[in-house]
Image 1 (tube, rainbow, N blue to C red):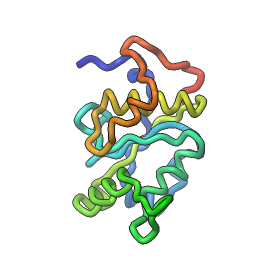
Image 2 (image 1 turned 135 degrees about the vertical axis):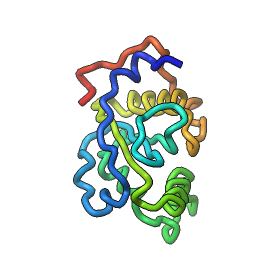
Image 3 (image 1 turned 180 degrees about the vertical axis):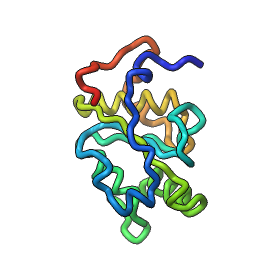
Length: 153
């Protein structure tokens, strides 16, 4: 499958294992965008991604940091656990913090546009842990569509 035009525009950064991020979270930018977790330092491609997430209303640093702690002792709102965080925690237990990597793309768009990018990444990358709910809640980009290059850092 050829990469969609919008995906080719993305400048993925990071490729940092969780152990390194636990020592220095400043490696992740204080900017909005999307992130992916992978097993090993591999290219962001279909079949290689565990989980896709977005940081639309807070920075990538703050959002990614929420996956780096053991949240089980603190349930989320109304007692619910975040399915993606649980999946990443299980992957970390299996592969170790040196085996799970995070990569991100900085995207300075509106929250709605970042949600659309996340839904499009989920649709294209088919990650193991994401529900397809995002694709139902937000539109996905067509293969030929392009992102505003001024919003990509």
